[in-house]
Image 1 (cartoon, rainbow, N blue to C red):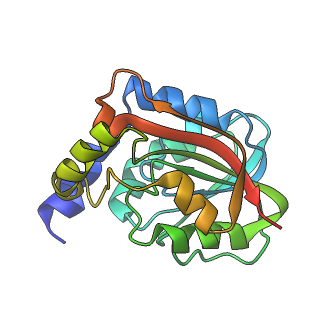
Image 2 (cartoon, one colour):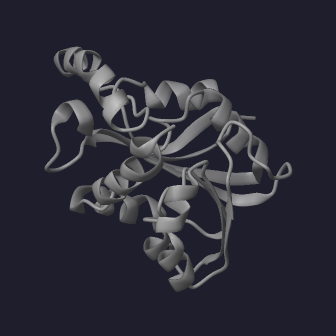
Length: 206
């Protein structure tokens, strides 16, 4: 860790995550969230203004304390209590069946072991609880895939471990979830190699 990782990268990502296209994705996926919520990959708290009034509290998990500092004003302005836990998604410090909903937006691209993180999300969900997911990843188009594989190393280096070529729908299934509803498409005003979206709501497969 150094100046780039500790200071510059969190601020760069805070600005990147404020784009109009990404904000629209947040609005779409968060509209149905309710109750007690775990957000994995909280970052600088960009989701907080878009949670509906049905949310009672949010527990925010993220290993970046620098990003948490950037989130302070958003946490203070939230209509519900927000608890920040400095932890990675692969080991969530919460008991089994603790949350009505789990939210993951633009996070699985970066978590070192995304299946382990998804399995943890599954563990902490209450029976019948829902995973709300919005993530960019591997395109369905082989031509776009080739560019994603070529550019992945650069993206990984510049954006704190972000990967362009993870098959998000497959990873969700491997972790024991099934989508109740899912859409895959290219995000507006975004290059195809970075903008192939998977947005959906998943529940634990019995």
